[in-house]
Image (cartoon, rainbow, N blue to C red; front, side, top):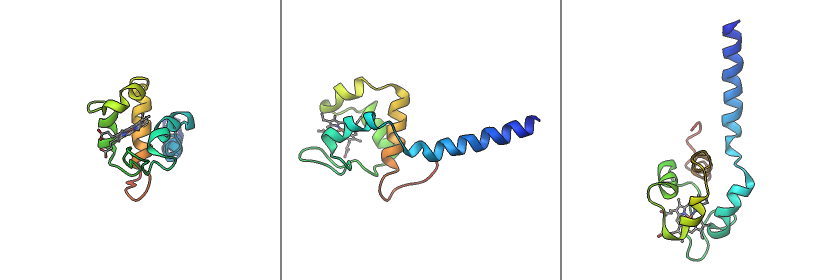
Length: 98
Ligand code: HEC
């Protein structure tokens, strides 16, 4: 019985993590505002799609650019992690199951 439950739990987790590549659109919209619709950069804002997970997370936590203090200040830790996973999974550098 326990085994069955853990099988269900594991497959549930896998379902969630593969759909973790869908971040709340409202959340993403904030980033798109500056970084462009595809997060491929816009004017003075650098492209961020496909950046390494750690680098995206750092930009939202420990090394926040001045221009992003306002937006980063409004995010929860969980949202920062979700966004970093999503963004690092865009374009090329997708290392799958993070
Ligand atoms: C108000 C405009 C603005 C918004 C909103 C914004 N950014 Fe930025 N972001 C910038 C600018 C400008 C830079 C470049 C800062 C610098 O180089 O000093 C930057 C840099 C970054 C970098 C580092 C890029 C690099 O090449 O090192 C990452 C990662 C990043 N932003 C992620 C995000 C994410 C994720 C969001 C959404 C939560 C977001 N940004 C929202 C303006 C913005």
